[in-house]
Length: 107
Image 1 (cartoon, rainbow, N blue to C red):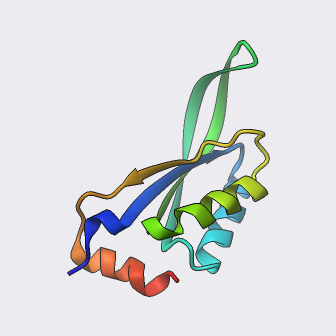
Image 2: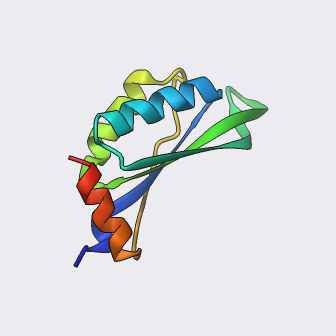
Image 3: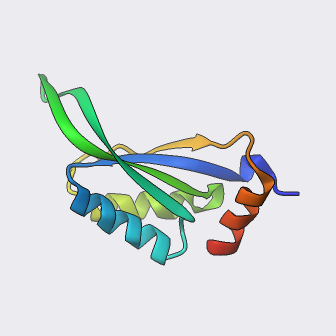
C-alpha cells in the first residue's frame, strides 16, 4: 500500500506560460515530478515596499516528498524571479492507484 505522507504538491508561480512550461518539462523529463499542472492566477503581494498585482502562472507539481530538495534546486536555478515561491504541501491522503503511478514515473 502506498503511504500518503511520502508524496507532496509543490507550488510555484511564473511570470508567463513559456517559463511555466519550461520548468514543467524540466521537472517531468528529469523524472523528479510525475505531473505538473499550469493555470493562470492573479497575485497581489508586497515587494520593495509597494503593492503589486500580477497575472502569473501557478504550477502544481505532484511528486514524491523525497524529490523536494532537487525540485527546489531546479526551480531556483531556472527561475526568473529573485525570490520564487516554492512551497511544499504534504499529501495526507490520496488514491492508492494515483500514488503508485507517481512512484512508477519518478526516480
